[in-house]
Structure formats: C-alpha cells, structure tokens
Length: 139
Image 1 (cartoon, rainbow, N blue to C red):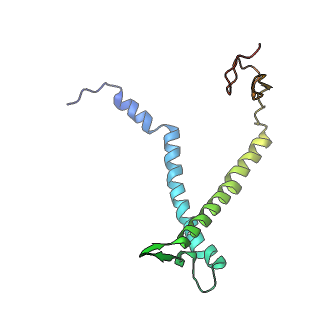
Image 2: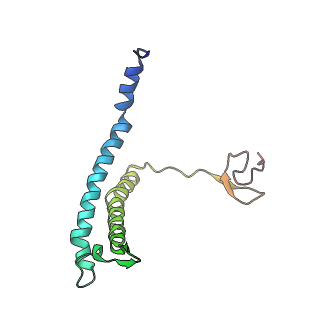
Image 3: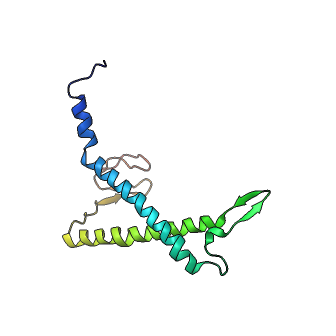
C-alpha cells in the first residue's frame, strides 16, 4: 500500500473542485458544442449562399496532383467558420464586457511612463533600469 499523507486526498479534492478548473472545464465543453453549431451554420447555411454556382458547398472543391487530393474547399469552409466564431466572440462577449466595464468605471489608469535617455524607449516612470537596453535610469 502506498504511503500517502493524510491531507493528500483532501488537497487533490480541493484542486479538482477549484473554481477556475471547473469553470475552464465548462468553458471547454461549451466551446466544443459551439464549434459544432458554427460548423453546421457554415456548411449548411452560409456556404450554400455564397458558393460557386453548380457546387453545393466549398467542401466539394478540390484538385489532384499525382494522385494526391488537395481539398482547398474544406480550407475555405474552415476559414469561414473561424471568421464566424471570431465575430460571435467579438460581438457577444468582448463588446458587451467592454461596455459593462466602461459603465461601471472599472477602467485601469495608464501607468505613467518616461523616455529612456539611451534608447528612447517608453518605460515605467518608476523604473530603475530600461527593459530594452538595461541602462540605469536617473532617479
């Protein structure tokens, strides 16, 4: 029987049930389901509308060189799916959160900066050395 410390099982339980880990797992599952919805949206609705006449989807587009099939239409579908996901995240997550943060006044004040006299890089005003050229800064 392995030698375990009395609190090891408790530590593992607290790790597994940690809020961030559970939230990440839920986000991963939701993202996987969202990917399937977006793929279906692109393949079944968007692509047939913008596809080449006579082709049902871009997925049918391909060419062959020396018995190797290059399915460039599938790549086009994937790019369209990426754009749809990026647009959904931007319009339904990023913009509403930015608006909420602005309304609640949670904006972060910019850190005061100064210019390094050696390399002219902007550095924090309280820095004692430049991050770019490592020269000591006057106090």
